[in-house]
Image (cartoon, rainbow, N blue to C red; front, side):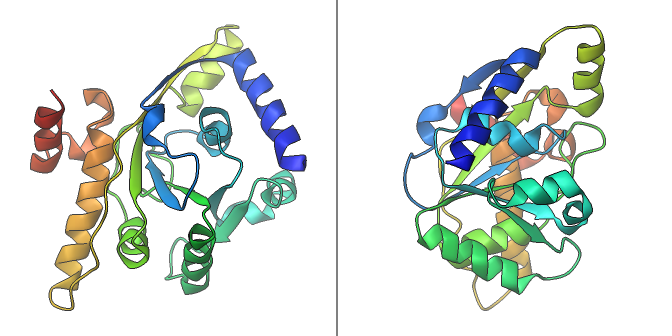
Length: 223
C-alpha cells in the first residue's frame, strides 16, 4: 500500500518536471525474476524505474553511504532498497538479491556502480556480470538519457521540463562462468552487458564503449 502511494507521488512529481519518451517497454516482462541493468547518470535514476516500469516488485541495490541520509534510509523499506558495500565483495547482499529474484522479483542495478561524472558510460564493474552468471536470470539492458543532475537543475531554474528517454533492449543470458580463465570470462560478460547498454544510447553517451567491437556489432545487428 505504501509503495503504491509512493509510486503515485513519484509519477506525479516526475510528470511536473520531465517529459518522457519510453521505448522497448515490451522487453521488460511483467512477472518473473530478472536483472534490469541500466547506465547511471543522475540522482533521478534512483526513482525513475518506479515511473517507467509497471511492476511493484522492484528492488534496488544502493551504495552504503546513502544509508546515513535520513530520508533515503526512511524510504529504503517501502522502495525495496538494499544497501551494499561497493568496495568489497558483499556476499550477503548477493545472496539476498538472488533469493529475491528466485521469488520472482525484478532487480534494478547499474553495472557502473556509481553515477558517471561525464554523463557517458564509464567502465562497468564485474558485480552484475557475476550475479547474472551465478543466478541464471535474464539481463534486460536499459539506456537512460537526460537525467544528468546539472541538466535537470538547470532546466528547473528555467522552468523547463527535462526530456528523459528510457530505452529497453532484448533480454539475454550470461552463461555460467567456467572453472578455467574465470577472470577473462567475467570481463567478457561485463563487456557484453555494457555494450548492450551502449547500443541503446546515442553516440555521445557511449563513453568508453563507443569504439568497442562488440558494441559496434550489436549496433550493426540492430539496423
